[in-house]
Length: 280
Image (cartoon, rainbow, N blue to C red; front, side, top):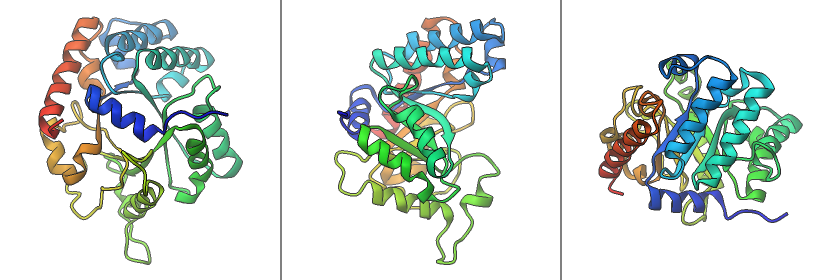
């Protein structure tokens, strides 16, 4: 089976050409209501495909949140399949935010669902959870290498519950999050211009000076916009790794719908502010 060019190389090029902004598609009930849409499959489809129409031809990455499609069952997943297809046709990369994590054949099944090239939900990258042990992700890592796709591994998340696991200190004195980052750095070793195995690091988590974020891979950074972080915060939070940051904005863009023009204007504002902040 032929593979794509590695995800890291494709992402680096997209970020250089379009800027690093990632727009999330999070069609939860309150946003559908703000757009004047019903909380049903028809509203889901109108919302999601309007976002794709508005921004997929001008941003590097689109990140659908799978949970908001799954809640409508098979019809919602069918909408997501169209969203993925249309996003990739418009030139943006798809990062599927599904946060899958399991062991053995089950982890392999999750990987097949999103990283196998003939799968209906084939995406350029997938978010995954390492909290059954980083080694549990091996089936996804192997398939990503085979198909030229990537992973974003939860490392330092912005939810208040995260530190009880992520900041826990191992017997060797290193935190769990630092261990995850070290595994990713090893997975990306020698890759150029960028490795394909990234970390999820919230833009609102505070002081990260004790962590080595230079993993030679991308850093998916939720929290910009409605959650309180600003583009100007990125250099302070991410330091020397800021050039590899993919800042995610969801509600900060989505609340400017339902008109395509409003979504595009909000996207351009964030994109310009991010470029100014990170020097790209």
